[in-house]
Each structure stands twice: as C-alpha cells, then as structure tokens.
Length: 405
Image 1 (cartoon, rainbow, N blue to C red):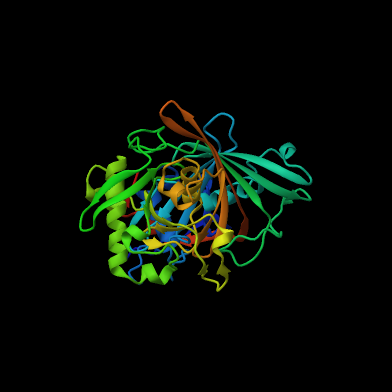
Image 2 (image 1 turned 60 degrees about the vertical axis):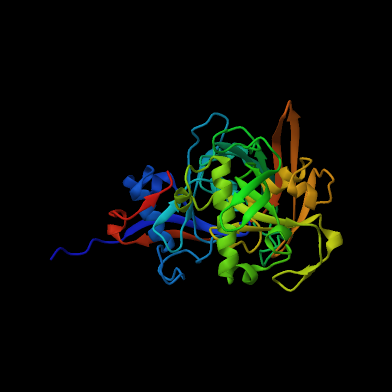
C-alpha cells in the first residue's frame, strides 16, 4: 500500500473586501501545475473552498457556503504597462465541481490594493508614511483597469476607521475604487449596451415577454422591473431564496438575457457561466426594513435594486453590479433610469437588502453609442487571517473538474 502523501501547504491570506471575503494567493506561491489556467488550478481552488459540497455548508474548506464567501483571488506581477499587479478572480460553485472565471468581483477588488502593498508589489518609495497609496490594478478576467486609493498610516495599510458599509458589521478605513472604461462583454467587447438598445423585449420561456435593460458596465447585468415579475423591490433574501418558483423564474430571465447579449450560444451553456450575467430587479423608492432591522426611508434613496448572484439573492449588492447600476442610471431611457424617477444621475443611492449604497458613473455619448468613462465607489477591506492553507496532495489530480476558461 502506497503511503499517503503529505498535505500541500500553500501561503495564503484570508481577506474581506467590501461585503465579500475570499482566499488570496500570490501566483508564484501556488503549486506549479496551478500556476496556469486549467483543471489543476480549478481543482485546487475547489478544495481550498471546500467544494463541491452536497451538504451546502463548506465545513471542510475556507468557503462560507454563499456566493459572497466562496471566492479565490490570484495576484501576480503586472503583464500590462502602467499597472502594479494583475488580479484574477475565481467564483467557486458551492455544490458543483466548477470554478467560474468569467467576471470580476467588485467587492474583493477593494482588497487587492492592500494585498499588493503588504506583499511587496508596490515599490517602497511609492508608499507614503501617511496618506494615500494609489494602486493600478489590471483585472485579468475582463481586461479592465481598476485604481484603488488605499489609506496608509505609519507606513502600513490602514484598516481601522469610521467608514460604514451596509452589509458589513464593523466600520473600517475607506478605500475608494475607480473602474476605468468598465463596459464591454459578449460579442462586442466595447458596447455598453450589446444589443444596441437601452431597453429590449425579452422572450422568456415559461414567463412570457419582459422589458429589460441589458448592460455590460462592471459586469454583464440584466435589469427588469420588479412589478413585471410580481415583486416589489423591497424583498429580503428569504422571500427569494426560499421560493423555488421565484428562483427558477429569475434564472430563466438570466439565461434569456445571456443569449440575447451574446454571452452564450445555447441555453445549456448557462450552467458553465453561472457568475455572469447577473440579473437584477428595480423599483422606485419605498420604505422597507433592511436585514439588520433598520428602516430605510424612501426619501433617502433614489431607487430599489435587488440582484442575484450564483442563483441566490445577494445579501447586499455586488460591487460590479453597482457599477452597472450607476452606469444605467446615468443613461436616459433605461429601466434603472426610469426607477430612479426619470432623472439622469451622475451619482445614485440605491436601497439593497442590507441597507443603502452610493455609487457614481461618468458617461458620454459618442454618436449613437453610450460610453462609460469611469465608475466610482467606496469600499473597505481587512485581513482576517494569514498563513497557509492545507489541502490533500491528491487535490490537483482530478478528472471531474470543469472550468469556464
């Protein structure tokens, strides 16, 4: 009998970024087979998180059994001129042997700058004793630039602060993120609206005809009116995630939107592209009670938005979907613009299940095309634990792993 091999012991940092958390790696610290895309890398990320888990708990891994906590990040030296680091993001499925590399995580983007500073990717002369360190990030999944403005105190990344983010229990230091030229996905890599329209008519099997705004800023997102699908826009997670009919309806909308946007060629491909597109439903402002019990007043927000992530209603709002919300609110005629009262917003405050969030976008019209130059939002980040993760040595020998790459 062959004796068991010792466990793989890999340097890693467990970080919260925005309303998400994930396991961060330096590319050079990964076992050699996992330094390139493919089954070995996917198998490693799955085992680190604890997927696939038929119990849906991630007891045997670092994941938290939600889309917000089943994430891995790989940071490496920059491949693009004028950037400080490359940032690659993997969304790990909970119940399937699948890692989706098709999009970015806007929340974890806020942790990339602090990680880069702490792990020596930024020259020491660029880091002020006190002030702001600017980190230029190349987001490899989507080929876009993110600029992180990270606060520094006594030469170290400042984590403690007074900035409050709904969906996060404790205040932290504010990190400002700029997403540059964040649009482009599917058949047309530059189009903000891949169909060429700010509103389209979707034929959704089993549901019928729906109006939708389909946009690629931040992350491909399909917006529909809450009232058109029998919802109010004030729903919290149980109202959606415990209702199988509503989950099936929203997934059908997502698949129809993915087809129309050119992200997939046939419905079956949606199973291997779970991270994108997102589907969200919008409504005009209304009073509601957030998940922490706080009353959100209609007069304090511009609109209501609820968004789905990996088949479930998100507990707050994805950072990338927030970019899509900001861009759509700034373009006349979209369903987001309509829900926000029909007034063009350069910044918008929307209500989500955990509270509220403010995000801004700068858009321009070039001929018949709308272009997003920049989206801006504030997040926070913190190191939760650092050291090594351990996984069985046989982890990367897998024949059952699938990848979106």
